[in-house]
Image 1 (cartoon, rainbow, N blue to C red):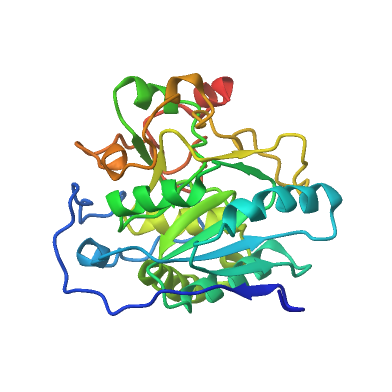
Image 2 (cartoon, rainbow, N blue to C red):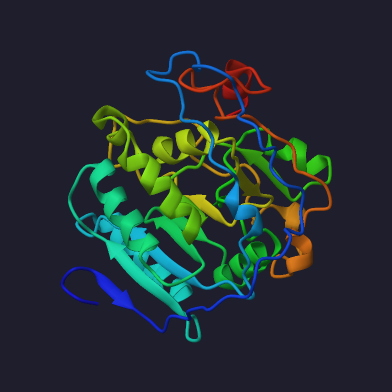
Length: 304
């Protein structure tokens, strides 16, 4: 690792084959709402064509960026446990730890820009206060092979996620994408950054989570949340910004749940959707800056 916190391992590159059809149901090619969402400081941009539908990936390749507070002992200890999983022999990824002491909106832009510049199909973005599935990369590969063209929010932090599980789903869709951990196709990250960097300064300084969530919702997209989630936050580690205390910052259907004992999570078939997963709305608690979802925010909060 260099003085700047960057360590790059072997990185697989293209070229990739010609476009093929997506193996799962497409997005609607319409915006989620018309006009200005309640409480939003400005109307969303006109949704761009959902170009990712035809992006082909013969085999996914990855870059991994982790925002790491290497001056906090509890987070240093977490990273000491997680690095052997993330840097396991035979794992070919571009790797960087973002250790700058900077506001959320500054280090996240550094992280996203680095990820977008890598010659890989997907960027994986994690934080340093989490537990990981012990076979993290094999599960991630299976998930991305099954759903290659979506933003994947790895925590599944919706309190009603057990309802989707009870209905037989292995995914749910929601705009909310917590910074705890997510995967973005590299081509899609470029599109997000182009829109993000054109926004007024007040919107560029929102939290990492909300910047990505807002863009997904305003362009008619959703993140896909896996069931089970393959990350879990460590509740004993406090947030680094006490101004942003959030009740739904944990996973509600983690892989450690007894219901997933023996589940073939490293199998692409497990993650391949047979039907379009349920849409749980723009945000978990019904943030008034974005369109309302199917659930009452206070009802969700009572289950958090």
